[in-house]
Image (cartoon, rainbow, N blue to C red; front, side, top):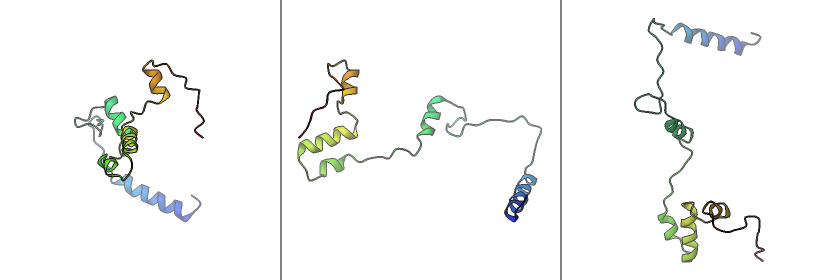
Length: 104
């Protein structure tokens, strides 16, 4: 330990370690992401994305002051329902994902 901060951290760690009470009971593992404490891949998936999604009130789309076709497009966009080339190919629809149109 070369600095005062390192010495202070060591003393704090020593205090924390002194407060731990050990027992002879076998260790138990509880998964905090399920109610029964058992691990499932589904709960791990949900835990991974916990807090990463926000809820979106789609009624705001319909209240927007814009044309109906724009509202409808935005509504499809929020629901991930726009038929992009990858989705068309997944449905076995004929399309060429490498062709782009010049929209000038």
